[in-house]
Length: 60
Image 1 (cartoon, rainbow, N blue to C red):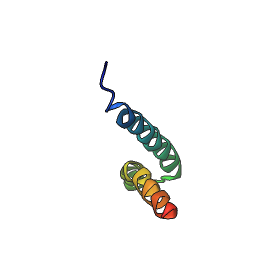
Image 2 (image 1 turned 120 degrees about the vertical axis):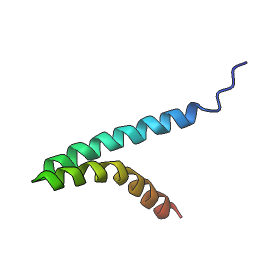
Image 3 (image 1 turned 90 degrees about the horizontal axis):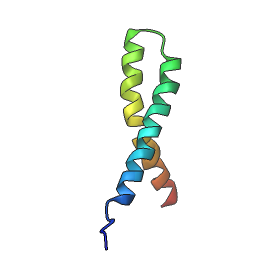
């Protein structure tokens, strides 16, 4: 019988990746200059993590 311990982690990574791309689209549309576009890339990477952190905080 196969060991499926990593299956949940893979789907979580995929959902986090979709969150990053969605955040990039949103923040890229709001940007207005070079530094804002650079900040949009950084913000898109970290925004899903803050969203999950706040969601867990609300569950507590």
